[in-house]
Each structure stands twice: as structure tokens, then as C-alpha cells.
Image (cartoon, rainbow, N blue to C red; front, side, top):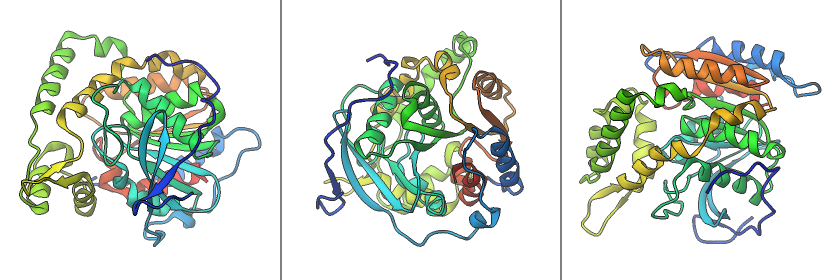
Length: 345
């Protein structure tokens, strides 16, 4: 399905359920980044926009003790599972990276609850949401996000997306401007067309897809799964409690007694392949709201080239480089919350 430029999807009838089935409504820290991002927002915010709160409101260690409620909602023809940390004020919707799930946001969300009502959902195919056998183009993820906002009447929402989630959030702001107030994109996937058209990159990506489909997906225990994943580059520098939370909430025990990831490797591979279904470069000039992009520092300059090129197309954007890997939100969540909180307030 191709993306359609529109103000927003039609209102949906909302059905939510909680997790009991009842119906119902960085190896190196990021210290010093918060003030820089706050200053950037002060320069970029629209006329009449909200100012930044005192930095002390979001200092490390000042987390909400509230555990999230887990519910589900029908959106874009799917049942999407989501977490709601509560909070007063504007809705802040968090969109995870490909292969992750809503619970990895918990350490960040508890701190952002001081800025508004914080929600995170499992994207299609992920976590506890529906898992259709196909339909993982990133255009579908954009439609799902817009439908989620509309179904729960969260507009205008403030979006935070990591990796592919950041790209999806930017596209949603372009296509559904009345639904989105501002966007934080954490190391979004914004590779230039000449980079993704390079034969060497395409061959690397093909091998990556093959390895994703073949990845290990069975462990005898939680500890075994955590230890296995910690040895992989993607998870090597995650904070221990975040990695354990990812495994605890992202696996299910089968009839054979083994733990398996809730997202099958085949669907994960399809979600990576789905990047090609979204022409983000044609959409970026239409993003009229303020945007904050945080990206990690890399030895490979190509991802940063794409991010800088994208920022040049965005009318109101600030870009900051931060320590850590692509997974810096899982490496130092408190510092990320402190960095983006003033922009979201």
C-alpha cells in the first residue's frame, strides 16, 4: 500500500483492553547534552510554543514510580498492544526500533511522564501486537502510527522514534500534520539514495537479511538468552537491566519449554526490507513541526551524511551528535530522557 498525502485517517471506533482482558478506556554518558538540546529547541520552537522547563525537572534519578498499564487498541485493521505510563499534559508517543518492543522504553518513559502522558506501542509484528504474515513496508508502519494516534484521540501528539521508528515518526509528521506537534528522532534511518543504491551496500544488506532469517531463536532460560544476546554487537553495550527487560518481555515459552523471541526472524527480515516502501526524502520538506535529531558518532561517515542532508530539508530541525552506539537509548536511558525532555515539555 502506498502512502497517501492526507491530513489524517478517519476517526476509528476505539476498543481497548488491559493486560487482564478487561475493557478500558553507551559506554559513555550523555552528560551536558540536555542544555544543548534545550537551547536548540528555544531557537527552533514555533511562535507561541511552549518553553523549556527547568532542567532540574528531568535530572537523572527523578523517575516516576508508576508502572505502565498494558492495553490494546484496534488501529489500521490490527490489534496493537501498548503501554500507558500516564502523566498529565500532551501525549508523547514512543515508537521503538525494528525488532524491539514497547517495554524497552520503560526507563525513559518513567522520566518523560513529567512532561506529558507517555505511551509506547508494539509495532505490527513486534511484541504482543498482531503479526500478519506480510505487509511490513514502512509505509504501513506510518499508517499504523497515524491510526494509533487517531484511535486513542491523542492528537496533536509529540513523537519520539528510535532508528526506523524515528524515520516513521518523521514521515507521519509530513503526511498527517494535524496529528503531530513535534518529533524527536533518535538515530533515524536516513541513508541517501546513492548509498542504498551502491552494489556493495546491497550485497551487505542481502547477507544481513539471510542472517536475520537464520538467527538463533530458542533458549532454555532467561539467563541463557541474555548471555547469548550480550555477545552480539547490537546488544553488547546495553545496560544490563534494559537487556533483561527486552528478553523478559520479548520472549514467550513454547510447549517444548524453550524461550523464543515473540518476533519471528522472517517477520524481522521483512521489516528491514520494508524500508524501500517509504520514500522519506520526498516527504522531509513537508515536515512543518519542530524536529530534534540525536545521532550517534560513528567511524563510518555515511549515516551522518544522510542525517545532515535530511536536516537541511527540514524547516525546523536541530541535530546533535551523542556518545554511544546506534542503541544509545538502551545504553543510557536516563541521559536520553534528560536530553529530550525539555523539547517535549
